[in-house]
Image 1 (cartoon, rainbow, N blue to C red):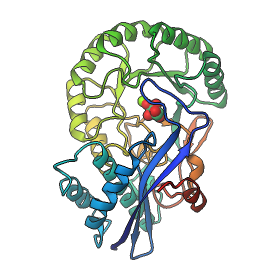
Image 2 (image 1 turned 90 degrees about the horizontal axis):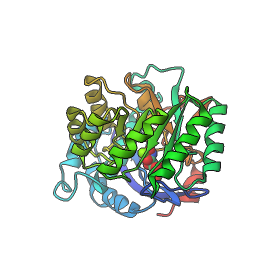
Image 3 (image 1 turned 180 degrees about the vertical axis):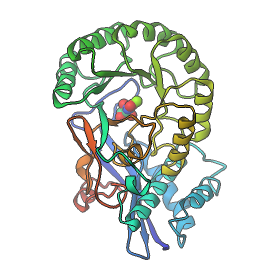
Image 4 (image 1 turned 180 degrees about the horizontal axis):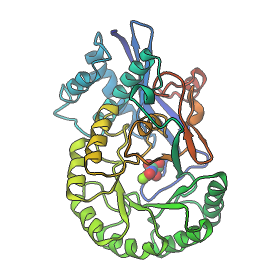
Length: 365
Ligand code: 0YR
Ligand code: MG
């Protein structure tokens, strides 16, 4: 099989209403991505996820640098292609950020092609074993800009629907307000539901130490991204001092970054995201690394779950997956969560193919 054409795209899907966390306030979810065409008629779809900012730079990277290097190559040589793009022309200016997210989109499209050629959904192509689906936890009611009333209403609805895990944002200007909101949620959902707290890098070490301890009153399963993602030492201190597990990874770009966190004991829930870490190829290596340390992988869903459902279904040490249904309506085979569980895809490929109507409607480039 040979690659015959590579075309970038950018889709912007509106959020109704817009949400906030401690550092982001997206009005749209951005999907800078790529369609890779082959001489056998198979088309692979890959994308990364953004707050709809910087997308054109990711698309430029694909068009100007990665596309010429992909033409005429065999998509099944994905690991070799990955290596040549990462350590190719953009190595001097790249290795993280825009170039690595562009590489993620390309890599995901190549895995989509391989699974389509095999006639299997990606999770089966990867040897996945979780045929009865995977546990979902719901993030889509815990936003920082929700009033406490709406927060309680959304989260109790999830529990009524069968979710056994929910996540809420913290990182309000006054942490006392976070404390009251978490208290109200824990009271409303009872002791048996997993409650995760996500700071989205909003705290410094002093605030994290003090309020991380106080919030233990409400038995959170984890405290997510309390500090900025470059601060391995700060996270290590928190991991030592707090009784709550530290979760992070949605802003790490390579297996080396994960190695440093994992080896130091600075992370427990490994939230590696294929759309940021350079795609499925690198994701699988991080999963192997985490397995060797007996750490659970619970991916962040920059893809909103379309790709990660396959990966979690094929990974033993991955107990559950985040659920945010913002973009499911644009796909040929949208993620399906029922009674708090993902039902696995049946169509061949990575579940990344966008429907023609949605492609027209949301395409901004
Ligand atoms: C975008 N999930 C996250 C929103 C999410 C963000 O700002 O999706 O909160 O990336 O932290 O765990
Ligand atoms: Mg997060």
